[in-house]
Image 1 (cartoon, rainbow, N blue to C red):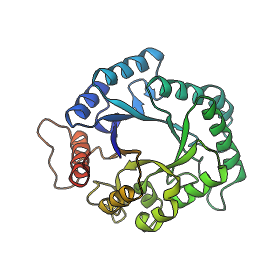
Image 2 (cartoon, rainbow, N blue to C red):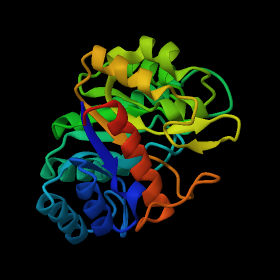
Image 3 (tube, one colour):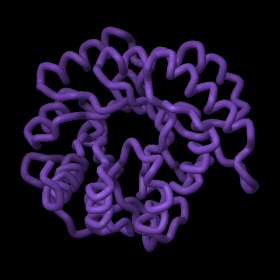
Length: 273
């Protein structure tokens, strides 16, 4: 397994985030928010500068998170996504040495089964991504179809494209209402997993938590991933801007930076990464 972290989970300043990721001995970063907007909205010059900063620091880019297909399935801008947004994301991912582009399964309606339109549109996205030699990774997300890992894995299987796989986020699954992301869900979806996000969720407070304190049993999940031969990325995505109650910031770090540092320390305590 390989470790990565979202730059904007460390700091909104890419230079500061890259500096800290390097000092924390995290070998790769994931790209989402940049000063010019969410990837790939910033201009070419900003993306070029960001990629050069990463390369100069000796880091890799593990994947990109453009936030595609999080709106309604009948979004009139979907064709523009196919013709411009997705190709641009894949092009820059390729320039940066990765083929991993994440997406969602569209905004969830109140009830009912996953609509056929969701499957059809994701299949079209996977086809476009394949033309650019990219993998499309479906992230389970509480406000979308595919909210739990099991539902997202079922969507992946229905799309049935060789370059379409699951981005497993147990924390998101817990937020969506899953009582046991691991082991109950994981054992039934592990064949679909090609990317993993690391964060935790506390149902009693209804908020995000440090990895060591929430509902997800991360030490057991790590062991299972190792036993199953998972060789992909584990990406720290703390989702915590403020310190937990009673916590203090690490010297020289902001509260947001401290939370990411502590999740890094937690991973290091359980994995040799």
